[in-house]
Image (tube, rainbow, N blue to C red):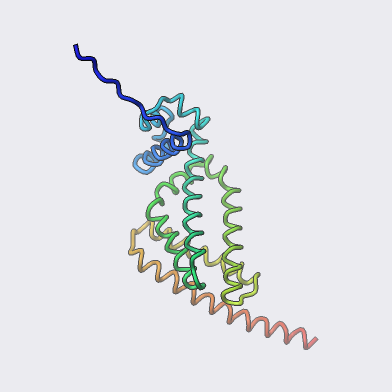
Length: 215
């Protein structure tokens, strides 16, 4: 009598296994929503037991937070690589804008659904604020160096520019518009904004200096 062969389960390193679980969770969130994610379901999707899923993530909320954190870190790493290779401010704005739009196009649904979970959004809130502060400082320094812009003005301009880029990402997510055209529009608006801000600041400083001198 022929004995059936047993399927040999591939042994993965812990990090590989945890990423496999997160990959399964991401796919479920994208296709069915956050509510469809359960430890039982993830075990089945990843080909492991529910108990093993718990070995990697103590509960569902921690797993979903780990997924969001992973996606944010991937995006930040991609944006940093793009930024570090930019030879000038306009190229810097273009490549980082494109990195953000590509991220929205690829992972927008996933990020949005995860951030709509109150427990996840609350836990990630402080981390998001810290990440934003680091991003603002990074771009402010680049503007100061590339455009000879005072650092405080560079910080203010960066904050406003991030708002425009974020609005562009939201528009892309809602409409699925032409990403190349959207990229060009955002870059053109930001570069024109930098020039206008610098002109207004120079005029304001001139008036302020004249006022002080008059006193």
